[in-house]
Length: 194
Image 1 (cartoon, rainbow, N blue to C red):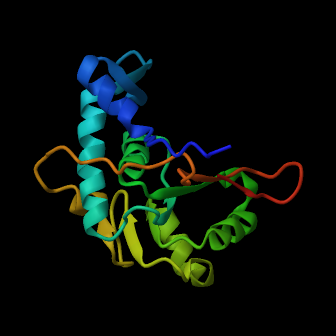
Image 2 (cartoon, one colour):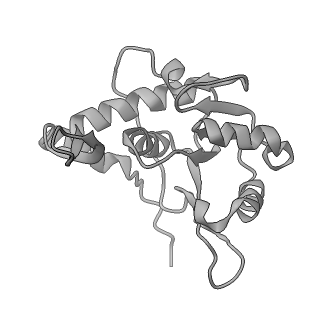
Image 3 (tube, helix red, strand yellow):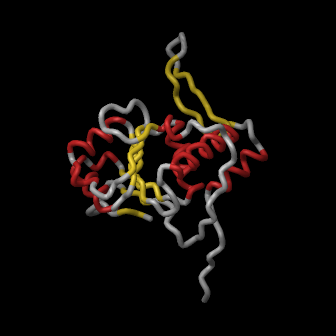
């Protein structure tokens, strides 16, 4: 039986939703508290999420995160997290996500095992790679989400400065790796799920 290598890109669904329902809420996140102490929320529409991920995809591509590039993603759930995930899919790059609940030692082993070439993370992630460099030897591109201190590389703001224009999605196939996800491994050692 022949393998079905039909072109499939998860990000194409975002493009479609941005076209047919541009102002509908795509992502809703807590944004603090209102004057009565209740949780206040902010949102991105499908159009905003699509445009933000286009901008990030273009910037990531320019700094060397291209199709197939394994990239450690250490960002808390946020608007940036969701925009980055869709940027990865648009490029055809491979986000490597590790459940931080497994503990630092196991997490570092998973990151090392992934043989990633880039890291996009919040400042504590970059501090971790500075104090444990042997686990990040294969990483050549560093992007900080938030304030960059002394560790070099780019910031998310640096790579997303260009004016918006649509990003041409990579035509990925069903047999390509879309993401590598490491869970806690409660039934044994943590393994990456592709």
